[in-house]
Image (cartoon, rainbow, N blue to C red):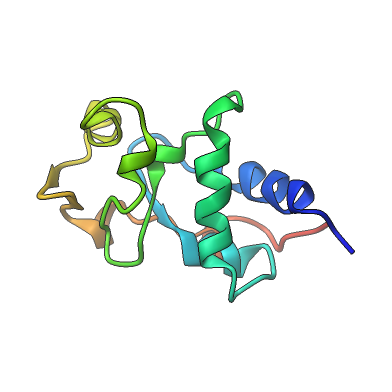
Length: 114
């Protein structure tokens, strides 16, 4: 059986590839790594990523573009500030032009290999 650490590392590998100025969803990452019912666990990985180097967790939002993980960032609006520094517009905790800035690893990356 694989450990949660292995799962988290698979998630981190995908998140590190999200381009600057783009976002993806927990579910898209879960589908890409072959665990389509594990969106919530992807969220747990993002929460655990804050000690990891080069994991842009701010680029992972829910399927509607909401900053559901924002309370896991230090500071009141750090997640939003990080996204805005990349040119992403956020209003009322929601990414604007979500379809335009959405990046789907299932389309953009080659098939996931363990």
